[in-house]
Length: 372
Ligand SMILES: NC(=O)c1ccc[n+]([C@@H]2O[C@H](COP(=O)([O-])OP(=O)(O)OC[C@H]3O[C@@H](n4cnc5c(N)ncnc54)[C@H](O)[C@@H]3O)[C@@H](O)[C@H]2O)c1
Image (cartoon, rainbow, N blue to C red; front, side, top):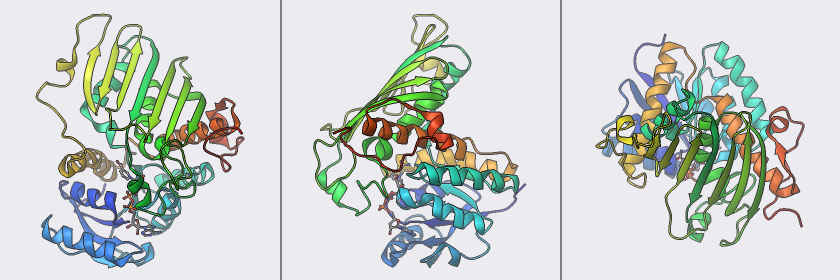
């Protein structure tokens, strides 16, 4: 049991680091006392925002995790995706709880290594949580509950689409964006991993994926801007996933889960429809009251609210000693699914997810555009 205020360090003070600062400001019993970034101007900008906008005390600023003051108990990692595991290891070595931004990392070798470290760390009372804020949206919670309690009947299929637009300026805005080494993929890894994670939460363990990917509307990018995927799950359920950053203008993200007794549909993070128990009456308002609408994630406060919902779970897990709802095992399965999609698109063959989890299939050489 951890009592008292939890002192937090944010590592990586870019776009999402700012969002974590806004979210943590909403959580009683947490305060940001240290900031780390390899670019001093980034720590300075976020320190000023914490004092001027969020009413916090000025945190100390550092270039390395090793320089974080000893009293800090939670390290939040908000750096480019390919650096997540290495930085998490360094925080765990200091005995600190870790919150990692999604995705877990970009390579299965590093993902497996963190899974081992996490098993040992959890046994020593160190919690490692991975951000997947949409698992905490009331609409997604309703669909998961209906699916897991059998109210949808046998789950038969799902259709998920992430039809977004990202400009060339977006990809040009950071040297790491759109690279295999640090972004680890494109429309599926960066933008679509939330939706992949929801599919896995709703439908269970994925068995096999088959995918095509392509780069069609951007330049100076190594990764895909469009992907289409079929997935087969351990329950027998089948799903299709479409993810793109080349659909102008942004269209709603949608996940539809179909069962023999009902259907649940999440659209733009809200519950759009829910039929349960073999009845043809739409029960949406019974599961998520009509007045309960989430804000648009493009609004900074609504974006922070999403992360704050997950922080409430993370803080409770640290204080009570139970694992958090989204930890390394869940994030490793989502990573294996995304990397499996890239291996399949590269080889032109279906890929078994278990082979990525145990390392039988190597994901280190993947390409956009599939087999030549
Ligand atoms: N959960 C979400 O909805 C969500 C949204 C956006 C981004 N993300 C994730 O957050 C991560 C960061 O994305 P971003 O858009 O904030 O990127 P960004 O480029 O805006 O910020 C990254 C920051 O990390 C710093 N940095 C890089 N390497 C570092 C290191 N080794 N040590 C310390 N600092 C380092 C950079 O200087 C930069 O300030 C990515 O993994 C991304 O997938 C999640």
